[in-house]
Length: 291
Image (cartoon, rainbow, N blue to C red):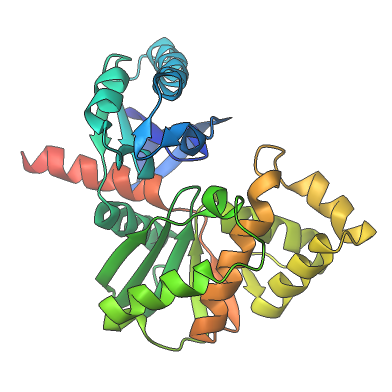
């Protein structure tokens, strides 16, 4: 059976996942995650040579692992880190690692998020989904099982970690997107949460409340407040369940999630186990077959 290696180059981490396709669904074999914090190497829209080198080093190690497994298809998507002035320099360096590199636009990132999430929640026809990443946040509206709008704005948990925890920047950006894309200006009881930030929050919530793939907004709110105020029980759970590389940006990411839920008056969040990587994989296979 054909195996695929997908490297996801994000603002906070670079992830490698190898997949096989079974019954038209991606099935994960190997998962690796390396915290690189590429966003910290960007100044005035330019990524430093050190940042580019770090990203290339990680991809070279991932490519060696993929080749050791005799994987033919090695594809790397670059999300927010490629939206810089010297993007060509970054892409060129990453292509030299052996991966075929795909720089994604904000729309593509959000759309692939949605395609991936449909694998976890195929019965959902109408609603709003989100993905709070390291450098950006994606919002997706969908109707009758089809994507209506898929947008990305440059404010994720890493950027937010440099701002006050109660910053109004989240609300400002969300409402700006709603003004530009009316399909996002709606009230929903249920949101779909995609990506590592919401999955990390859901894991912590599970340890406290026994939740699984559905978390009440009020539970996330209490989790945020208790960890922020250093409640001993919640702090212990936070340290045990959240990856150390994500801990410094955890509360800032959860703040964005809560602002999305508050503005859209959502009572609960469905946690998607799948997202951009699976969506990117399926769409790239589809395009290859079409060619």
